[in-house]
Structures are given as C-alpha cells and as structure tokens.
Image (cartoon, rainbow, N blue to C red; front, top):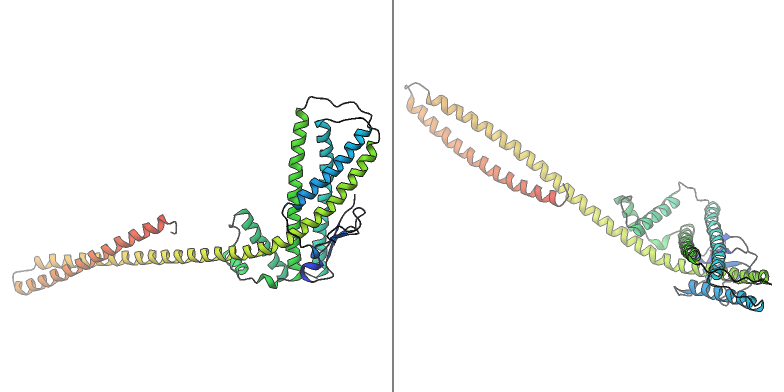
Length: 354
C-alpha cells in the first residue's frame, strides 16, 4: 500500500517546504489535478465540501464490495452479513494503518521543516507558535485556566497575516493531523460496532470454495489505496481553509478574555482600597473613643475640686462637656460611615471579588 507525499509549498509561498515520502500506489493525476506520482500538493486544493471525504470513502467501498461480490457470484458463493462485516473490519484495519502512517509522516515533516528553517525550540518564533497553539487548545476545550492575562493580551494583539512561513505551515499541518486523528476515531468506532454485531450473530457462514477470492481482494485493495490518497488531499485542503477561520476566532477569544481579566483586576483593586479605608476608619474611631474617655476623666476630676474657685471650674466643665458632645457627634458620623462601608464590603464578598 502506497503512502502520500504532502507538499506545503502553496501555503505560504515557500517552494522549498515539503512533507512526506513518495508512494507506490495511486500514481497519476486525479480529475482535479491534486494527486500525481503519489504526492498531494495542498497549495492547489481549493474545492469546498464538508462531506467529500465520506462520499469518496463510500464510493471506494461500493466499488471494492462490487468487485468482491462479482467474484463471489462467479464462484457461485454468497456471503451473509457476518462475512460483510468481517470484510469491512479488514478494510478498516488497513485504512487506520494508512492514516497512522500519514500522521507520522506529517509529524516527521514538521520537525524536518523546523530544522530546515533553523528554528530553535527556545526562539521567539517558536514561542509565538506554541502560544497560538496553547490558546487554540484552550478555546477548543473551553478551559482557559492555564493562560495568563499577559499571554491572552499577546495573542489578542497579533496580526495573523504577519505569521512566518514556518508558523503558518505548522498550524495548517496541526489541523491536518487533528482531522486524520478524528478519521481514525470514526473508523475505530465503526469497527467496534461491526465486531459487536458479528459476536451477536448466530448464523454461520455458507461453505464456499472462494475460488479466485485472493485476486478479488487484491483488486479491492487497489481501489481503497487510491481512495486513501484522494481523502488525504481533501483533508489537507479543508484544513487549510479551516485554519484561516480558526485564527480569527483565536484572536477574538483572546481579546475577550483579556478584557475580562483586566476588569476583574480593577474590581479586586477597588475592594482592596475599600478594605484599607475601613481599617483606617476603625483606627480613627478607636482614637476618638480614647480621647472621649480622657475628657470624661477630666470632668470627674473637676466635679471633685474644692469649693474655692468653683465658678471657674464650672465654666471649664461646661467647656469640656461641649467638646465631649462635638466629639460624640464625630464618633457617631464615623460609625455610620463604617456601617455603610461594611455593607459595601459584603456586596463585594457576594460578587466573589473579595
């Protein structure tokens, strides 16, 4: 079974960037000029269609199954549902193996491209790419806890049109790998379902000679190999278009989260300022109360003074009483303000900001 070479030259105008190895199957050129000599040039892939992959796979299955059924018919043998499911599981195993090989080639190609461009793991270009990938992962999972406000601001301020050839090609390749992995998940789910059905079937196979079945299987394999090459090209094309949209979403999501975090920081600062004000007010109340106690002691001492000079002392007592009254009003005002501040602090605690 052949493999597919992926040429990424068309992604960012770099004619030297290439991923993959040449294959032995699927040589030639398809109707859209995408596959030639086992290579897929993703820079030339522009056709839309979300269901093209499944349609192409279904078409190949139909052709391969027809070839097998024709051979069974010539041998006057008919298989039942169990045979079909087992045959399908055999094909699924090959499809999964092929897709895994493709994923390995893409990953190896990414590393080779990094070395080709002289990008060091600790370079600014690599760090920027890793940060975009980190925000992309957070956006897909919905978990933003691993990102700081500074990281979000950095991505939010990026002009994605200025990404380097290496960065953009890496992101496109990331999306291709992700889609290949999803195709593997679908196929594995189908295989598990087929196995479950086969286990539940009690009807045995019709005994047949299966004359010529080996040749029919080989022909069916060739059909599925060609379909696999076409599917890789479709996935690469769709991934390239998808990454354009995803980059815009990443930037917008980072902007939104950066604004939210800035607002939270402002509210936290306001809460801290109110807390400090309350502490200062509490200290002022304590000092005023202490001063009032001192005034009370003076009044008591004046009351116990000798009769001589009593008029002068009485005037002093009245003066102290007036000062005490003024002081009491000041303390009452402070207490009222402290009460209001306490209510504000409770409100902040309810909001979860303090």
